[in-house]
Amino acid sequence: MAEATKTLPDIFIFDSSPDDAVMRILLMGRNTCGKSSSGNLILGEKRFKRHESEVCEGQTQIRGKQVSVIDCPDLLDPDLNEEQLEKMKEQLLSGCSAGLSSVLLTVPLEKPLQNEQQILDYIECLFGPEVQKYIMILFTHGDDLEGLDQTTDEHLKPKDHEDLQRLVTECGGKSHCFSKMKKVKAQVEDLLQKIEGMMTENGGRFFIKQMKRSDSMDVLNVSFSGKSLPYPVSR
Figure 1 (tube, rainbow, N blue to C red):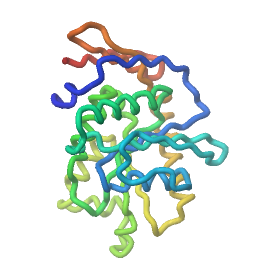
Figure 2 (tube, rainbow, N blue to C red; figure 1 turned 30 degrees about the horizontal axis):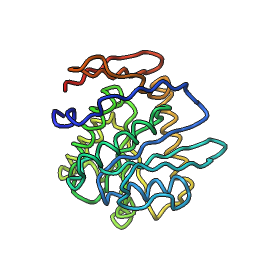
Figure 3 (cartoon, rainbow, N blue to C red; figure 1 turned 120 degrees about the vertical axis):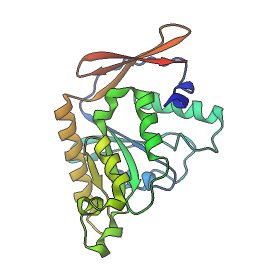
């Protein structure tokens, strides 16, 4: 957490009117976790490429609903230099300025966890603690379970998956799973229903509002359901 706060941008001021017609989804995760493929699955087209060097966004219509998907590269990739990282964060914060319906942390179901916990901490550091209410774990490679004849919940129960259990618990138990073995349309619609339910429970979307109070302290004002919560970030 402490290291992440040092790399925040000095100034970013967002003051956008909410647009309830658009469901905006942010995809976060490490490299090779199936993040970009998941974004393409939601959009119904190959919009995102693996190992993108910048934040990308794609739009589609699903059952009359405008859906926007933001694909963010792994901000903790050790190969990124400081200039690249700052550019990505500026792109990310700009793309999220109109509000977020959900942040999906993509996690390969059958692979060992790597920096997922650090990415989760980074998300909360970047957007403020209230964003946690909007984070959902999106498991990828769910088709690996087909041969085991298991559901995702059953897969997470054994003791050797305690790390995955903790991650899901930290996100309020919210998760979804994509599988190549199931119909894409049904999986995507199920995900969107979960996101809509989460938004209803939270009283709306997540907004970043404002910035910068002094040379020594930045303040993120996170607007949640019309309320602004100060989140100080030491520099």
